[in-house]
Image 1: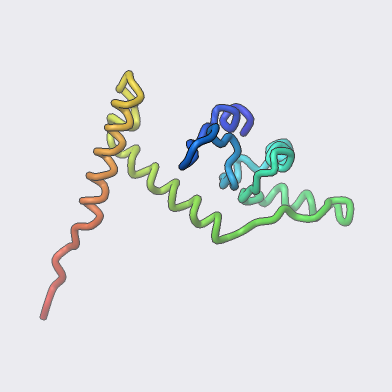
Image 2: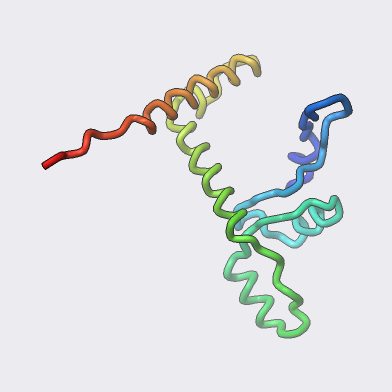
Length: 132
């Protein structure tokens, strides 16, 4: 599941050199908590912060000692994933972002930038407080 996404990943370096193709950490939802996904990330040396669904946790406990150790989980990192997900959901409130009508990548990036500015301006406006 992660392989097609991570194979196309290229992050520019600040200085000279080829782009990075391996992130430090992957934060995922419970839907990505399969054994294959975790094994793939482990092979590539990528830390994973993925919540484990209740059915997988119960199955592991049912197996007893042969169920193995639960995967590592960092609540702080998972909260960061949730903040990013909420931001993406705010972007999707805008039709141009949700439907992606823009043909060219740089136009779509401009649409994302304008949308981010509008969201920022709306969130920073304080409601007038009632003073007694």
